[in-house]
Image (cartoon, rainbow, N blue to C red):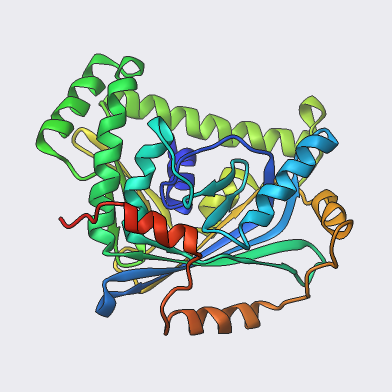
Length: 315
């Protein structure tokens, strides 16, 4: 796990990774720590939503999945698909339903942004964030049983120690986050080399067009953009590598990820069955988010029932 998947895990609030073809040119997340009410309020804005599907069937599926997000407690994740927490799940996916008691996810809304791109915004709320983080820790420790064969003996020993001693793995500090991974020194150094080699390769491909890649500004997408536009740090401690994301202790943090270059295939498919979404400015979305922060979340019935079925967690 390099810093790249670590950052994505935080940006999507540690939800499960599912297959899908949805892509977003730019995904912005604002997190507001409401300490008085012991919660985090989150605004997700996905600008330039498109599909990497290579046939009409998968394109139609992506559009149908995306439309769920304006009706259900479902969240579109770029490069992953739609995660719908209002539906029962079992096995590997079902473990993430332990987080449902802490979440309020409002259905979102489509809009056309200032550049004419199909876009989507959505509000969600995380109650009792420190308890939420503790459950994320439990889920992570439980998953290690299937991952231990991938690590060196030294890292495996550290993971076992972290499990026995219940080391914190996901830490919430205001609107900032820290992901903590038990990792031996040699494995940490190897992953650091892998990260910066990847950065160098992406820059070279962007500048030269190597391998048929389109020439582009390497600072606008990928790891350089992520490190430049977000407060991200890698901190090494004895036996642990920490990925520190956002300003720790801050009341408000803004995060941004940029994906592939926008295509209008989903916009065209959208327009075949209903009128195009309205044009909306960021100022209007900000105003609606301010209103959301002063009221109860409006969750759909299916998600409310899912929360009622879940066992409340108090830690």
